[in-house]
Amino acid sequence: MRSVFLKLALFILAVYLPWFAIVKFARHRYVADDFASWMKFSVIEDDQKKFNPPHIAVGDCLLLAGMLPEKIDQKVFNLGMSGATPIEAYFLLKHYLASGKKPERVYLMFGMTHFQLADSFQEYTLAYGRLTVGDELTLMNDIRIHGSPEIGKPHWTKTWIDSGMTFLGLDSVTSVQMRKRLFTPSYKFIQNNLDTMALTRGQHHFRDESLDRFQPAPFVDYDHLSLNPLITHYFRKTLDMLQDAGIETIVDFIPNNIVTWKKFSPRFHQEWQDYRKQLKRDYPRITLGDISHYPPEMFGDHSHMNAEGAEKFSLAFKKQYYQ
Image (cartoon, rainbow, N blue to C red; front, side, top):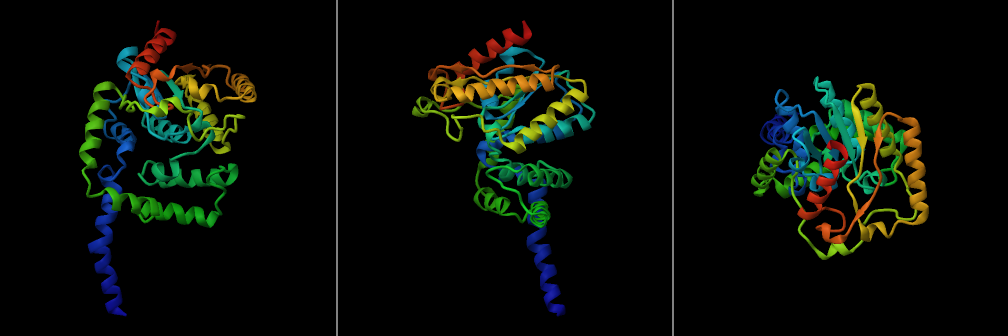
């Protein structure tokens, strides 16, 4: 029996502790290339004293590629993150405000996909350590209460087990990502992206132009609005939090590719306008924009702006909110 415990102790010291150290302190070594923008959390956390822009824009990869702060105003910082939803926005802003920061204005900007799908939060928000254990338990409880079509409603025992495994770095997503990327040269790529984001106040990259820009965006329900109940819950929690803090809140949208826009049904447009009216009734102090469209030549693919589209949008954004 003693030899078994000795072998277990040696295994923990030689194998598991180095693994745990990498999981907790060196996630940038294995984060997927396309998700370098997630390290913006670290930029905020590691530079609390200096990072305090008056206006921050929080959203997904459409914002990440489409907003050029240098074309808008020195006050603006682009905090778009690939695959992010209002779930990530809530926790990012919660921790940001808890650190003592209080921006004058917050823009919330998500594509329609991320009002309908939870997308990557389970794979990336949890596996890359962007939430505390308390955050994870809160989130898992909300999943059980509100549900999410692609996630379901996990039983409470699975909630605790999943959260514990994630904290220990033993969940399947972390394991797969580390095996794939820990010894690949992605770190330099990520660092280059972080350096670029520092220079451009958050704008990260454009998508390479492809024939996909003449195709409608995938993963969107075009027939009706199909709001994800979990995302709707966190979107409203974010609005409540910002309103309670007395922060000017603007909800706006990166334009759709017109190829996608033409797929939206009359029913979808009606349900969207009804939802906007309900939001204005519930949150009369917010500024609420509307969905719009640009031609496919303004996009690198079905949804993400190319350089020309980003400049056009940013100049229009400046005219609307800063002139």
